[in-house]
Image 1 (tube, rainbow, N blue to C red):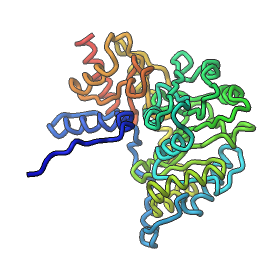
Image 2: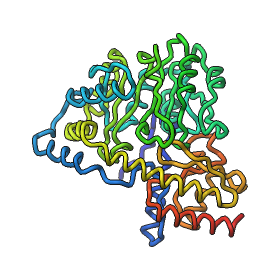
Image 3: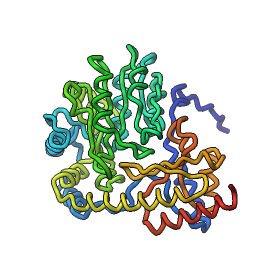
Length: 394
């Protein structure tokens, strides 16, 4: 007979969070397997196919032998194209040795927190915000300091409030615009004031701009573009949202060259390198035609408009018009239901999969997140189901 052994995990594993979208997706899929009709508005993934020219480039790369290890920082050919792209879009001079290509956007979050934060250090992050920010801060034993995104400011942060949170223990400030889950977009004045609040302090900024090509009103503004901030900014961007390449797993960070060398070492110690054939496809994504990107953005905007208008007609719901990304974040406090309980009820009772605002932090209570990465037909069907549910339960 064998004797069971207790699983003795490191204590830090208890501090590691999760991304609730995947948990709700599993539950929704399980209900579908039982014959339920589920409308998926929970997962943050474009419902479009990767553009054909990018797929062709990836397939061609496989046939040409791009199936082997590459440099941990990424193939030089792709890093050159990314450097040129960022130089043009952020209006700064970027060189290939300032670029690190990684499998998805999350590694840049993971590596940045690992590289800068120790016990006793503080990291300021948006709340409600992408849950991996807080999870990673807690995991390394640093102090997670939330900056609230306020509905009355269209889910932008209060810069004066941020200024009051910065102190000598602050090692990193995380910004995200356009923002997940709210769709909020920081304006140029916000960015300039944030840079002024940081001043000459030796504080790094992780600027998560993964939705930078999905803006419906206004323009994208990066703190990397502000004078004096490039050497203190880690730009996070990638291919998943813009080119519907979530399954290709490819993102990148842009940062000062000496930091890029350390981030590349973290790649060496974790994933070795990003798949070579996907990087060749990434070159085609940035260099090839952009018309399908524009078409996706226009379609997301149409869906956003339908979703927001419909939610604002439902008892207990009020929803601001998000300016970017592909999410809406309605206020549901007038329903009298807690966010998690309401999200669960909508899935269980009427087959609409959404996320509780609390999946994105404590300040998400009173909200739900719906992804509009689904057809207008399904969005309208979901709205009808939600309205039917509210008439029975409110």
